[in-house]
Each structure stands twice: as C-alpha cells, then as structure tokens.
Length: 72
Image (cartoon, rainbow, N blue to C red; front, side):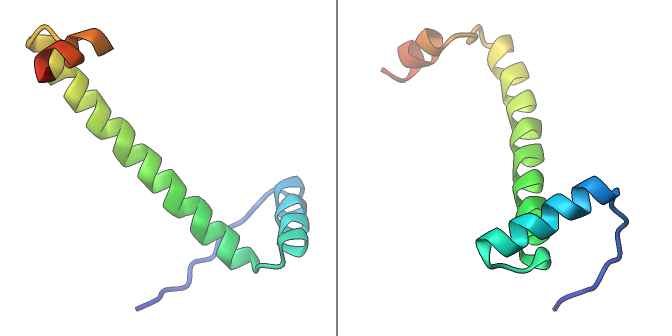
C-alpha cells in the first residue's frame, strides 16, 4: 500500500532536488523515498547503538579491544 504526503521545501532545497533528479534520471519521489529510508535506518541504528553502548558499559566493555577480548 502506498500513501501520498505533501511537504514544503525551501526553494534552494527544491532546486537541488530537481537538479539531482535530472542528473540521475530518477524521479523526485524516488530520491525522497531513498532519503527517508536512509534517515530512518540511521536513526534506528543510533538508537540501538545508544542502548547497546549503555549495556556494554555496565559490563565493562568500552573499547574495540574489550569486545575482541570478550569474543576471542
């Protein structure tokens, strides 16, 4: 299922989006979809990382070497 949303963009961003769309030969919607997908992934990753860093810290794991030592 798909839904349509309406957003407003400042002219400089819209112009850059249009330029990118032309240069890459893809629609503005494709670029916006990909951008939102990437943003959601990054935000989820940051949230998971924040949770895991806190858990690791409580277990004395704070460096790459600590992780290596635990899994080796």
